[in-house]
Length: 90
Image (spheres, rainbow, N blue to C red):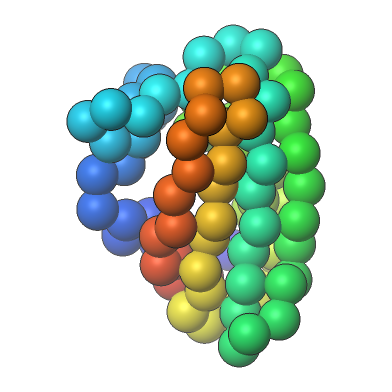
């Protein structure tokens, strides 16, 4: 399954910066929730995350076979920020 990451402000392979002021560093506690059609499909927390790429790897494994538009909610408890982005699963 491919997950299109058409998400404004997010970087890819080096992965540290999500947008201009939000970053993820190794050891941050990050919560993620994926919502489709008003229902929470996946919700998880990672302590050993070093980049946004780590989060997407976990998310891909949990959402195999799902297709459609979803909302991804990410909260970095360690750095005190949160964000929402639309995500197309295909």
